[in-house]
Length: 438
Image (tube, rainbow, N blue to C red; front, top):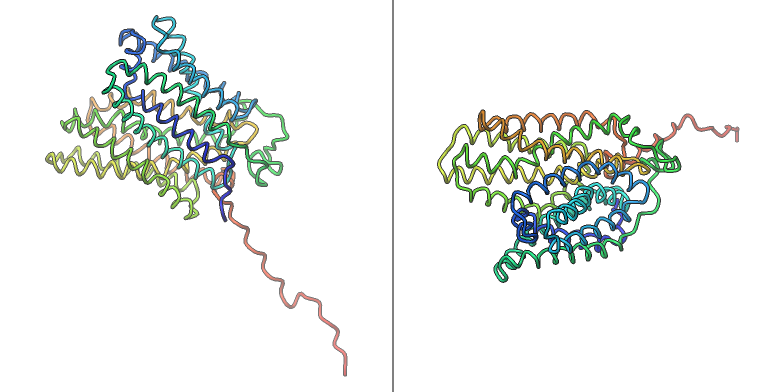
């Protein structure tokens, strides 16, 4: 069955790529970036960014409610506008109160954006097109962030620290342009019969939207969110645990961390869509392909335990780490599109924003807990955090397969399987013509 094309899909993807370039222009240098743009000390900048980031987490449920009330596209465009305005104002926010105010408003938009973007995928696509968009967006985000880091490096080489100011204004332009492009995408009309939120399902869109009580009463979806939390801890490993593990346990050079990030980013940008397409065309159930991604995570974590036990020479360590990163990245590329589309498709249309706000909290909570959890376990034994992550990934894979029968079929299958044809009527059951003598 051929997938439906999304109206305005190319504009949506180009917009995502442009905004990713903007993100890549400041994320790798966030503390330094804001220090030079505002003139405030690193300490003050760090305190403000932490406080506003936590405040951003608190408003994610409100973002879900806004999506359900106004639609994902409208809220998405509003967030792009807020982010654009915020970066345009950063160079003018030289005092602490001004910086805190701009950072707070921008952080609220940044933290809410994943919820709204996931909801937008559900609003403009259905079936296998959701998996395709998930994979394409992830690939573009990785490529864009890498390109953004290269751009800002060139800007700083040309203009020195003044380049941070130009970068802030460049971000404002990037987010504004991305918003204009995304405004061209169109909501898909209608829903497949039986899809959550369709007229033929129990969660009909004709019903008045329920609040978060409906989400909390949906035990299969909460189970899906809990399983994603276990996998999301693994997503934090590359950025949080990997550098510490290399320096404190393997006693390797910091360049190994840079090499790992380069391999991960290059693979995500280069083969992410290819792998996701292969998984999608195989007809695999989303629950099982997401579980496969979690199992590949577990295999990579076991590899780290083995490497940390053997501790071979520097060359062997480099080769082993690169192999582990490749396995880890393939797991990410298999899990991410299926897991994302699974959550979008399991959410009833009328309350999709609230559902996905709840689901995205699993990522945010994992990101918040990862630093203290990993450093605490690493202090006891360098292999212990990897053992913990292995158990978590295996638990996620087991939970996904167990939840399969309790989730809507339209969430589990990218393309709903056709019902088996009815057996032909038996010949003897047909009425016979009366036999007459000739």
